[in-house]
Length: 229
Figure 1 (cartoon, rainbow, N blue to C red):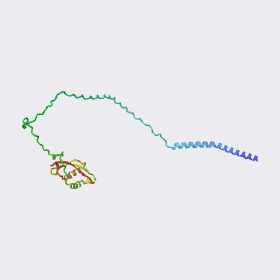
Figure 2: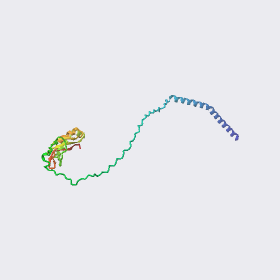
Figure 3: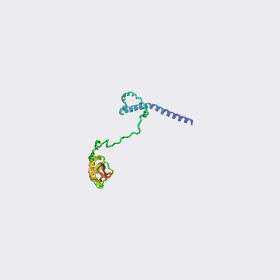
Figure 4: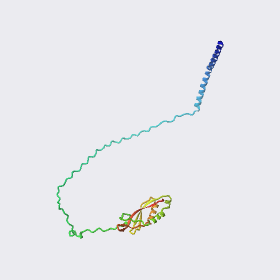
């Protein structure tokens, strides 16, 4: 039994020794084959791989401009304090208590020696818009007719485009309440609207203005508004 076992162990040791020898003998071939293959792969990579170039990361430095320092400014000294006003001094003059003003009489000042009264100069206020005093403002008599005139005179192109505006118009109204003159006081910014406002202004009728209980001619300024709403 022991001889048979010893023989088997000897055979196994011979087979292991033989495999190890075969591996040692084939190592040289595997090593040099691997080196040749690695060399071929490296040459192929360098031959077919695109050339790599480093990115230009250079930079330039701008020259700094020297700035001249402004000269030092001498600060003036603070102004001197304002002197306090002197204490008022009471005069020593003596004023008589019985001072009277002489009575003015026609004997001492005859009428012939007096200057003539100023002549009254009548000013034509209708020449240009001006301030005219009154206590009762003129009242509009025909508001409905004015509304129809606004719709009639509204320029169609501006109305269809939805463009409106307000024109202030000067009215000169006579003692009878009639509109004698109209002028643009403040434009709307559109000449067509300004011209239409003057045509509408000719339709206005007023009650006379009063200065206390007297009818007077006056200048007034009213807005004329064109709107699509």
